[in-house]
Image 1: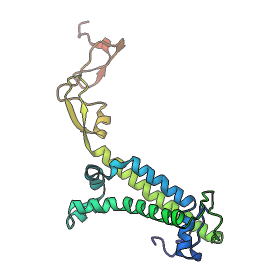
Image 2: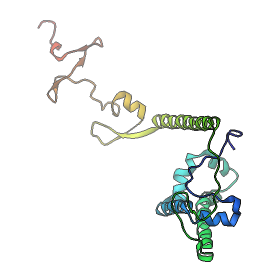
Image 3: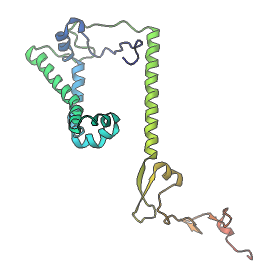
Length: 228
């Protein structure tokens, strides 16, 4: 347990827990109530998102996103890593199907997917939280949010520092490679020699400033020579 000895059991009474009645009776209760229904939602969602189980998705998205796979690949081939990656979904789906058939096709336990169900089982209930336990829960949640915030900030900075291709804004259809931070700093993407550095006169009905020889900005009306 990550936060032992401050870890406690937290629940919302969404479905009945009947572990004190024995493993099989508890399994029959779980796969007859809201818990099994919620598992079914994720199984259906996984089937609709079947592409996440393909080898191409694993190699292009999952493998580079987690260094654990890179370290494991030093000792285990990629095909074996793909088996491990797929195993969680297939194990969970097979387990849900097997227990559902056992509880309802073989034993005929009744369904009760109402909140806190099934109510035909003698469910166990834990005592309410004390103030000390509630403070510990809040501290754990705050720590988790802080870690998630730091991780999100690190990934966002990494995205800003990664070079991507932007189309040159002069309309030449060439690609400019730069980071997002560089793009925002200069206000666009241009190839060398393609950016209009000096604009004189009116542009789209608005007067623009130009650079003077001394490096200072002068209004367009001051372009006349010394004798004017």
